[in-house]
Length: 384
Ligand code: SF4
Ligand code: SF4
Image 1 (cartoon, protein in one colour):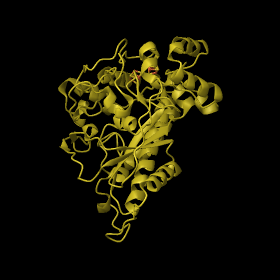
Image 2 (cartoon, helix red, strand yellow):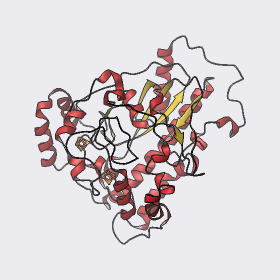
Image 3 (tube, protein in one colour):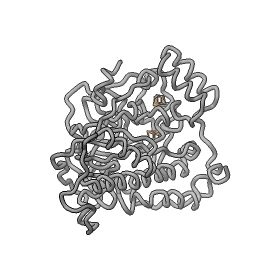
Image 4 (cartoon, helix red, strand yellow):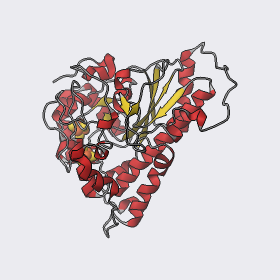
């Protein structure tokens, strides 16, 4: 089944009536209120996982995971609802000094120049990819559910926020290659900490220009449709964004702003057609949470929404595996043929997937033949 039309960005996947998603239904929130998920919550959030005498599960493996998450967990909490620290909406109540004299703003004679400056600044702060789109409020959560308070709070963005800066942060190829052991979790945690750092600083740069900005991680709005609208990549079977340069091996943050910017165009480079042939992520998913076969617009539980054509992930089964594994998992990133380090051969294959989709079966066969996506040894993280 073909998706509709590239220029409409994430709306190319919309085939029904799409309403705003309530963050309370997101899988990291449900264990706190959904009766069917309470036991899972106890296991995932409240059970200490002792180290094991096994590569990837030792104390030092756990310590590097915890260290990698430190900035996100302590100064942003984007996974837990955000709206504090680097992701604070009312940042001026935290930092009691004026960034610019009241009323002072840069003149926006040339939004193209300002857009270039924003991309330069975000890249300078560490972003791997930066794209701009107009804010589609369908992707903003109807309500937020910060895990600090465990209650829904209004999430209406103030008027005037019209643009979003989508930011992708590359995760370490070799560490993700160790999934589903701790080095992959460390790569994920580091991605989240970098998101908070980069998005938070980029938002503060905009405030210094006299405009408003809200930095967000997973909180406030769905990151994947925004990244698609901003031209960073395409939606894939594994439920993730696939980018041309890093495949799904990225984490996503965003900055919502009233600074006038020039949007990028959405892109298409053959991911949808490739996913129709390839099921490597589904085959290698330890909890069988990824759908085989054709895409659908039907939800499989309340953590998906209806009306969007895609392969819905079963986030309940996914989180159950994480709880049982004692650390999270990135097999659906590790095994994806789009997850490759930079290099001429891989650039050529990416070009060929975009331009000769009839050869997709051959590329898939070659991916298996060369052993891409196989799990790397967790001890290699410390020695290579
Ligand atoms: S993170 Fe692991 S368990 Fe979850 S969907 Fe991906 S492969 Fe499956
Ligand atoms: S592993 Fe294959 S099916 Fe899954 S997201 Fe990657 S390309 Fe698509």
